[in-house]
Amino acid sequence: MEKALGTQFHNQLITQFVSKRHELGISQMDLDEIIGVARGLVSKWEVGIRKPSGFLFCVWAESLNCNLILKNKGENNDGHNKS
Image (tube, rainbow, N blue to C red):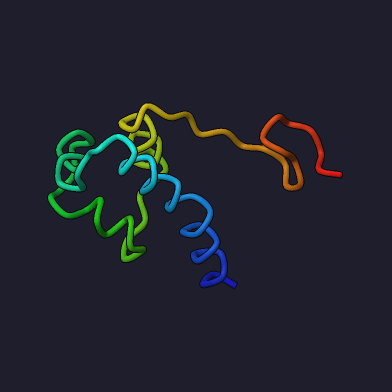
């Protein structure tokens, strides 16, 4: 089950972070410096070798000018249930 959760975490969340980084034109090494982590750590997060702590996950989102939002399963982006 832990492996399935790790795959879900990567597929649902990390891919969004990677896409946003590309959209903003920021390299992995530049993001390492912006966040203040060891060189190469963002790369390891993005490919799933390592996972960020809760705090660093929030810092990562902030560095991409994004908010983390929790929503119930089955909700659309507008907060309403899917039909």
